[in-house]
Length: 268
Figure 1 (cartoon, one colour):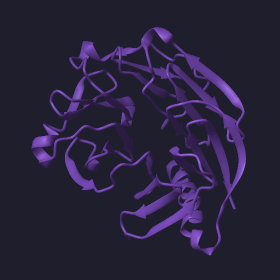
Figure 2 (tube, helix red, strand yellow):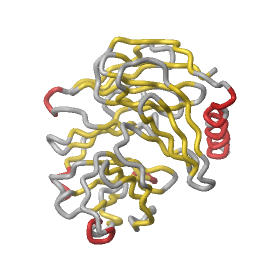
Figure 3 (cartoon, one colour):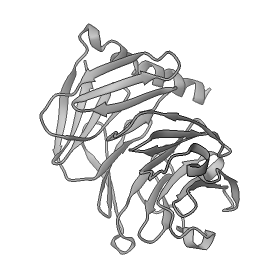
């Protein structure tokens, strides 16, 4: 029931984009003067801002709720917030995976990827049943570990399989499929076992989301949606003149990160 309700809510939140041509617009509700490299949004509507070694959590009204900092482990590269109660952060300089609770307090001891044989991993993603994926550039493959830190699946050399040399910069699992993004080639899709499925030809994206078989991404000053089943497209204009680093959709709001601001818009 919980999963069904979540899918219903996600379906509803995509309706404004589809109706963009009928006058749907964005109205700025909050503008925060911040500096950060990326943002993530969880299913509850909380937004997370990464700035060097700091992770901050805001509500959808722009109120700072919690902050996590650990300078000794270098920069935080990514925050996987697919489970708001178990947030995965990755410190690539030291090859560490950590888990935080919903107040951004350290939840458990870190995982050292060097101990698993992959000290050079560049990307990680949370996975089903408390597992995780990593991308190893030396072997050009995605590798999954289960909850007991045992290797369960591997893709094999992706460059050999696809015929493309890849340099991925982002990875996320959604509904048991794994999406590996390479700006020069697009989004490579794998199933839950690491088997390569297809390439989605979306290149040079600043950010993207996969929601109910739809790719939601920003391009210039527009938020766009592409339905992978029906091939329908829709777009929504994002106000302002600042260059957009990331634009994410959640419920009836759009979260936009620029060089100097985190802006929160209501969809009207």
